[in-house]
Length: 114
Image 1: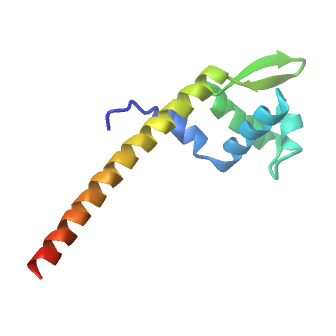
Image 2: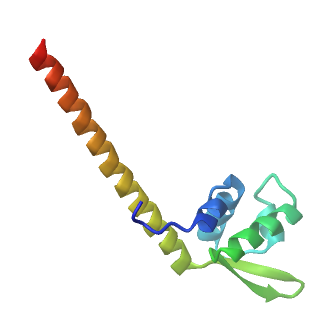
């Protein structure tokens, strides 16, 4: 694959709870582990751990707010993830087109030999 893919980034995005946290932050703006946990079927502590993973890969940024941290999506890193996903998708589309051409060639050869 010619696209440089950030495995840590995709590992972080691969978790459904973390994707839901990103959705919540994108839709509602910045939030704390406490406010975000109200929308999820997991504890505040679990949300805090998931936010820590997203923070380590740069998808969110944390700013201290009293005793808690307020998280918001890092638009630059999210755009990087979107760009990587689009590139990977384009590479898979090219692979599938090649497979289709090979299958069509085989089918044509079979029909010609029949």
